[in-house]
Length: 379
Image 1 (cartoon, rainbow, N blue to C red):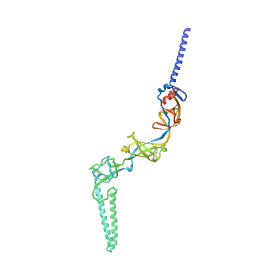
Image 2 (cartoon, rainbow, N blue to C red):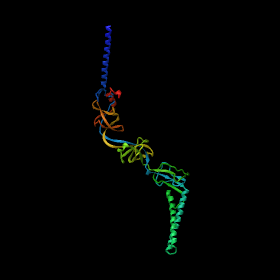
Image 3 (cartoon, rainbow, N blue to C red):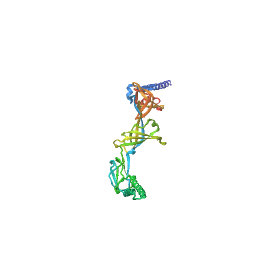
Image 4 (cartoon, rainbow, N blue to C red):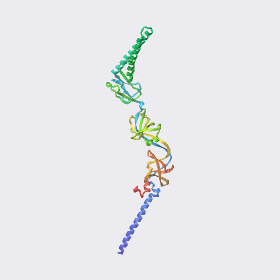
């Protein structure tokens, strides 16, 4: 019985000894990777290669705040014009197709219009009456001077001339209001000419078809420059002013940039979107941009000097932000930082890092795991 008790106690002692040495071995295996204090991680030289660490030396660089405005392209109003038929009639010929580059004064179409013939005829009749009344007034005026006609005849002739002159003016205005040339022709043939140089964006004219005076035959536009109509959020207004340069990136051409200028900032805030209207004018290089394309305008403002690092280097802990700085070879300090804006994957550092500091840009998460290995599961 005594022997059995001794054997049992020996077994228990052996188990405790095994557990003790296992704990020592586990502790040694951890120390082979790293040693840590409250805010410092030390990596053994032989094991650094097992961690994917990359270091970047912090340096002062030029930093700009980039503001993005969402919007769409639009033709410059003064560079686009609709070309109407101006007079009803039948189209007899068309001299352009959609996409043609046309010159100012180039003939676009010909319309045979009975309505135009009537207007011109009315004008010629009124003009003839006016010429006859004017000659009659001159004749009576000469007779009155020679006492061969009464003054009442002169008064009647002057009154008649004014009545006929008003009819002539009315006939001229009927032609002018329709954009028609005032000449001595009685023809109903009307030629439509391009009012400006540019591209024919459309063609709504078919030979033989009947058109009304208000029908748009085509739209001519000069598209070397376009407008980008965008919206500015309230929080971004403090950075922006008219005249600053920007780049327009359209959804259709994500790899292309169009140089532009912020030409106008609106005066009224939209009560629903809480935005202010903005207009940029930009050069349409190679005529790639089209009217109505969506995209964004990128404005670089508030230029200054500072330090910025890649987002991957920044680690969060208890609503604060930290980075690891290599203070000595294989020794990394856990530094609290304050940050500014993030642009293109890099974050501005307001405090916590100085120029020349060696910041861990890759592998910071692994160092954090080592530093907090005892509580990492609750992170």
